Length: 104
Image (cartoon, rainbow, N blue to C red):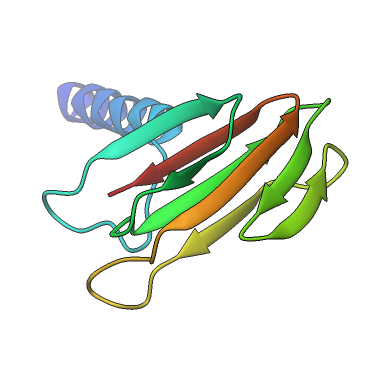
């Protein structure tokens, strides 16, 4: 019984540590790949992304989908309801860095 509890504890610890290291994607689809970038210039998140989180640095100013954001704005997440993912998401970085984390 002790061996079973030890193995169960190790499996739970392994699962818990992997859940912290890799974000859980509600709409994650088999075959999609997690990604993370630090944007310092304008760009676009590719169409077909299933979930994306925008995290502004403490000095960030810019736009996301044409809407102005500053460092004080909280991180936010967009999730796809369609099976093909989200449309392309344009962003601009006027100052600071915008961290983008998602899965496509």
